Image (cartoon, rainbow over all chains, first blue to last red; front, side, top):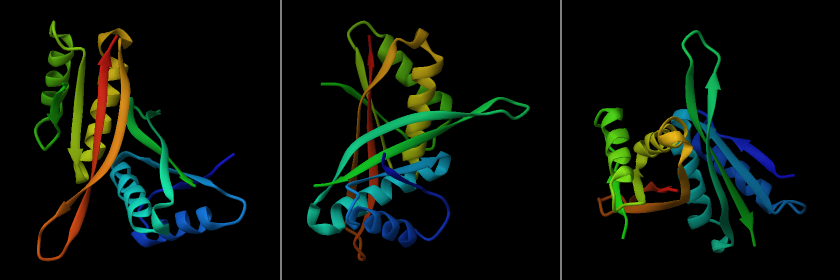
Length: 89
Length: 89
């Protein structure tokens, strides 16, 4: 059971802090970054910054999965999603 | 040696067609969809549409890798990248 963080329009550093706080808490070793639609590119940015710039390279991308989410609007539309699992060594 | 298709600002269907034409050509079984920055979310959309709506579900996502690309501008900046490998069964 991993903690997940949903990426949206809040300031970038809010998400970075949330991810780092989760991964550095005692009883958690992984976190799932989730995003939909245009925020998927942001989720990738956040994963890159966390893995490359913080915690001495001790965080790795463990899994990436893509999906799509279907709207039940009058015209059926679907939106892409990404889940990035980060793990602390 | 896979063919790769770089995702940019052209019409969406151009990329869908390019991916499908590559995957249905005789001597290719895989294609790599590459994108940077804001186009990463588009690459995910394209992968989803190709795998879910075309060719009778015979195309699968084989691999996803994230990375970052560093600009050598006056202020050092980096931009996220995604490579999605699609494979035909």
